Image 1: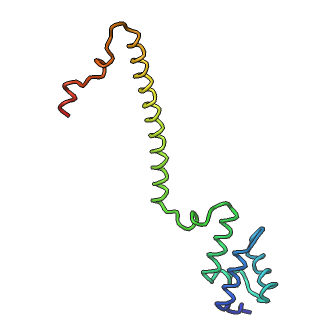
Image 2: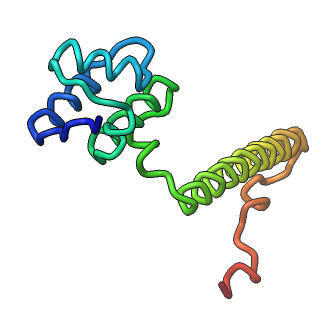
Image 3: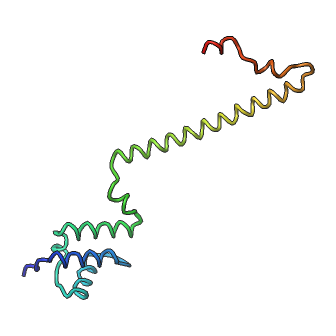
Length: 135
């Protein structure tokens, strides 16, 4: 016996059932819930043929697995490359910040040591050089 067609209204009700679903989700459990709530006998195969129901089912399963809905629906190869590039740039920034901090400590140490030298004018250490004028 062929399963009856599901009307658009019934399809929306099934999608609502899926959206509100709590607990373990299987096709068999969904078929049972539809039979109880909507008094509609159907099969997993019939439900799979309706794109809205199938997508809603997959999204709900992904949600239970911990995959967020926007991530599940929109991740592409270029997104993965962007994430890799982001991680690379974060690592590079971390290294540059570390180098910058080390260089600043070196400059501070140089000035601290220069202060200890008697009769040394610190302004002479930071005056503009002729090679810097041409830039």
